[in-house]
Each structure stands twice: as structure tokens, then as C-alpha cells.
Length: 547
Ligand code: MP5
Image 1 (cartoon, rainbow, N blue to C red):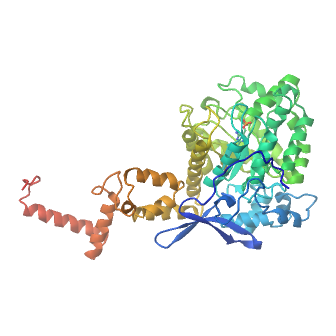
Image 2 (tube, helix red, strand yellow):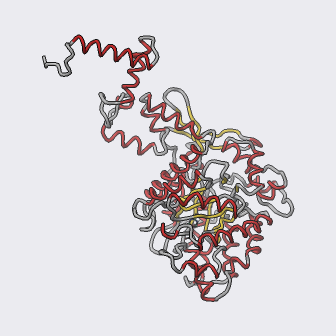
Image 3 (cartoon, protein in one colour):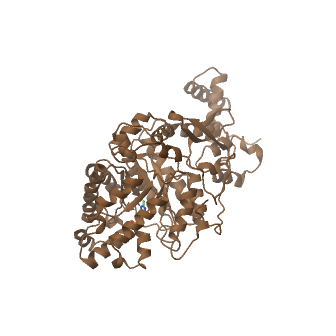
């Protein structure tokens, strides 16, 4: 029996990304790791990290009405609690390598013991609610590949369950490592159920949004009991991590009074309104230990929200932002002592010269808990291009040690993203994350760049497309001007034409060197000497008469 309403009929994209197919590689402890294999025309292949789930497996039967198969069901059922807890953190502290840890290790190409030790000290998290057995575990921490999150969810103005399920599958297809369902409109519970039962990646939420809906949208009517019951409801459904804005304290609210953009976090502004209306400390803060006890039962990870993040360049790194960060640090240590996994959310809008300070402070105050930032946007002047303004900041903050980047789509500040915006956001953030992996010297990151560059230099156009983050768009751009099949092996494209292709000219130089048994430098010199002799032979004239 499925819990999904059969009147809802989503259609999702299935089948492999062009030029690749799903393979499963054997990992430690009997786990099988899904990978995306790109077959190259020179007989080689490259296996890529794959977040897309069974949807890209040609042999899998996809039925969204019944949901994905429950990969982790037996893993969860087989194990006993340690010290009364069932969290990855508790197991890691006890020296136990779980199947989830083994799975993450194989995905990242590292030793399982390394995964365990990073989780044990809280520098990495594996967000895996026991009640979300469909998900394929992923590890978030600065010693691992930089991850990206894609936000979705409806609003009171726009979207349906069908659209949100489609966007979820679509985002995972293009590389989203986690997805947040930030629905604030109608049918929040049902939308989330559909997403959870069909998502191959961990799902995050902000429970406050649904709690607010339960009290008719009036923040002053909220209370701990309604919030707590909403959290339990979402834990039961299988949400893997939850944003909790527990660092917005009553005394911090006045610190935002002179800001250019005030409080831009939805959760943050709701809590500030509640604290002011009741002139009482936030119930998220005063009940934090109880909240830990709930999350611990399910192994739900905290994503401690940055309710006071800067929403403009002018407000970056101000007193309100850093006061909250200090409180998030205090809460991190409380949660960890209770064996609950923790990530810390970060900004926002920050100019480039103020980015690194954010990471250093977060690491110091929050004991290196994985940092999870929203961009940041490096400038405020480009609405409609904020996937780019934010990817500039995201690449830098990831390089400095941020573990997960929350994407920003071209619709940011303007409207709810559609399917096309979701893809642009995901690809843009894969660029930022991968650039940081390269700069951090992740051992396997450069393999893909090298394979693509080699294909480019050797005019293996199809391989160049297939190795790219977005093969469909790369191919269609090329084919816009040179659609014929022979152009797929031609030694030029329409950018420069046949005579001006630098790569072809370089190849000619190399060929010349080989034929004349010379090194490249010798070949250039020999070639110049040959040209010089020709020049002399023609009477040293720069311009020769046309014959
Ligand atoms: C939110 C968000 C919700 N947009 N992105 C992440 C990574 N977490 C949470 O935002 P808000 O505005 O703080 O409620």
C-alpha cells in the first residue's frame, strides 16, 4: 500500500543523460554504488558521481505512484542502537562503520574509516532519516566533494504537486545532492510525501513554514507545541534534515534595525515577529534540548538556520549576523553531545573580500560543523542573473571550506523557479562546486577536466559534449551552426572556422615536428627558418604581386 494519493499524476524525466549509462560498482560491506559511465569514442570511459537515482537506469521500472525501492530498509532494520541512539554520529563515535558510511566512502573514493572519523568529530554529516529508506546516502563535509542543494516547493501563488515532483527528479538528474522542499502554499504535507517517496537524494525542510500555515499565517499565534508536533510529523515522513532558526534571539532583533534590508530570512522574520510580540525568548532556543531528543530518534540532521543572514552587500558580516553565528555555535555543541548531527547555514549576500571571514568564524565558533551557504551573492546589481552573482561567491566560499552550496536560480528575488530555472541553477552550482574541488586538490576532481580537454584537443566533439555538465546544451550550441555529422570530427567549429583554429594549428606544429623528428620548440624554429628562406627567395617583399 502506498501513502500517495492516486489522483496526483506526476510525469518525470527518465532515461540516461545522453552519452552515458548507469553502472553499479561494488563497494565495501556489500553496498552497490550507482555511477554514471560516459563511454568515449576512443574506447576509454569515465565513471562519474551520480545523484540521479533509478530514473536514469534504463533497466529500472519507475512507478511514481508507488515510489522508489527502499534501498536502506534492511540496513536500518538490522542495527541496534548504541548508547540509546540510532544516529550516524552515535555509531561513528562508537567506532562503528555503518553501511551508509561505507556507501559514502565508495562514492567519494576514500577509506570508510576516514568517513567514520569525520562524522565522529562532527566535521561531516550524513543526513539519513531512518524513515527515508529510499535515499542514497551522501556525505557533507569539507574533506569531501563539495555538495549542492536545490530548493523547490510551492507558494500560495504558484505550482502543483505534479510540478514539484517533476522538478525534484529533474534537479537530481543534473546533479543536486540534496533537495529542500520549501513549500509554503497548499497541501504541504502531501507535496512532501510525494517528494520523499520518490527522491533518491536526502530531503531538507523548514518545519516553521508548515507550523505557520497551521496557525493561519499569523506568527504571533505560533507556540512550541504546534511547532513540535510539526517537527514530529515531518520526522515520521522521512525528512532528512531540518532548518531550525534557533539562533534568532530576542536581544538580536534590535541589531537589525539599521540594516538596509532588515531580516530577509523567512524563518528568521517569523521568529523575530514572535519574540517581539510576546517579548519572550524564542521557543526554538528555550526548547532546543527537547528538539534534539526528537531529531535523535530518527537521525534527522539539524541545519541550524541563519535567520539573521545579510540580504544585501551593505549588511554583510554585521553585528546581527555574527551574534547569531555565536549562538549557533553554542547550539551545535549541545546537539553533538546528544549525538545529533549538525550543519550550519550561512549567507546570503557578501562581497568577495568579506567571504573568507565567514568560513573562519563559522569553523571557530561551530567546531567545524559543515557550513552550508546560500550563494553568497557577490553583488546585488543583477536581478535575473543571480545564479551568476551568487556562483561567484559560492565558488570562493566553497574553496575556503564550505561543504554544501545552496543553489540560486535566475528567478531569485523575482519569482518561483520553473523547471528550466532549476536546471540552470543546478548546472551553475555544479560549476562552482567543481571549481572548488579542483582548487582544494580533491584527488579525483581533475580527471574529468583532463578527459574533456583531451577530447577537445583531439576534436572528439561527441566526447566533449558527453563529458560536459550539460551535454544537451553543449551539443545543441555546436549544432546550431554545424549540424552535419562530419562536423562531429571536423578540426574546427564555427567560432573560428577551419583556417583559424588554434588547436588545429598546434596539431599541425606537432605533426611537422614528428615528421621532421624535432621537438616542438625545434619545429617552430625550423618552421620559421623555412619561412625565412622562402621570404628571402621571394626578394624580401612583404606583399607579393597577385598572379
Ligand atoms: C532556506 C533556504 C529557507 N532558502 N535555503 C536553505 C539552504 N535553508 C533554508 O530560508 P529562510 O528564508 O531562512 O526561511
